[in-house]
Image 1 (cartoon, rainbow, N blue to C red):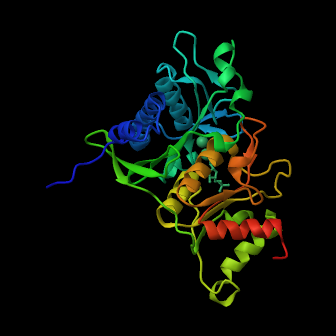
Image 2: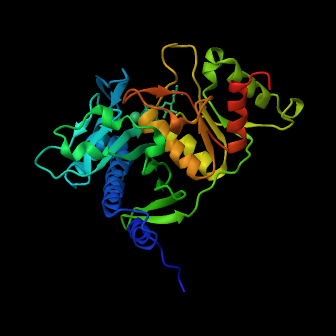
Image 3: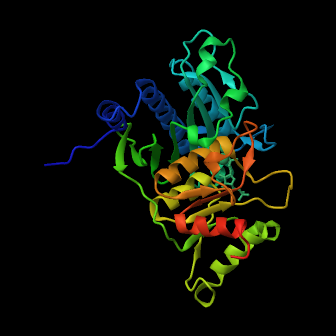
Length: 341
Ligand code: AHG
Ligand code: MN
Ligand code: MN
């Protein structure tokens, strides 16, 4: 007999029914985000045919040039999520301020953060990109208040109730955690449905593959340089084994690789802009990816402390990132904490 395929909807309903791990409102939220990701996937895959490649000439709050698809993806996510009644507000890489659900719609208890299109420098060269999202609860007193504000979002990553990403690559996939492990769905384009294809994703503890933008090596701090030098020394060095290197320049694609086959991903603090503690954004890149990596048995730090324990001070705050296979992330973190080790 042909084995029955499990859809995302079935997976979520079963989670809601059997272990009561998933409130109905959160299920609705995840369904709506995943539907928006289908729309973005469709726009991305049209490429030049859809007139969606190239830049707009505008800059976002980070001072980065906005691609047409950055803005399209942001709008798709806002429109999909504003009317469902499950959210109090949203925040995005592409918007300086938070987006409060308009008064004409009912409001819910969740806050949604997203990087609408991650790796957008890769859009025009047809390399994998993605959408990253993070869900937290609004503080409990928010219902009695007139306004929701940015401070309501400033919660450490360990308060996340769900996180995930969609990757637009050779296959479009959705990787998700609701705090009970990590699962992956592949988009069946003909049927338009997300099919469970990767149950219980786990990251091996050891790896011999690292991902870092080596063009920044002259700016790195000593512990990172030491770690990479030891990897590069291969069998002749103290690690006694050869390492392989990959760098896609889409965090989604680099993290997806390590969730599937292990590895360590780093965008460390460097000396280019001393006032910035890293390139990647804490609240809608590092936190959701850390939640996934930890749920898959891996580890995620900023070189010194657990990323999900960092108290955010701003919506667009940056952070150094070291994540992936547990034993390698521990090694890099040890090098930062006790350089003599
Ligand atoms: P975004 O496109 O959302 O701004 O994110 C890009 C990020 C991340 O996806 C990737 O890991 C990193 O930037 C690549 O940076 P470099 O170009 O410095 O390698
Ligand atoms: Mn990004
Ligand atoms: Mn982005």
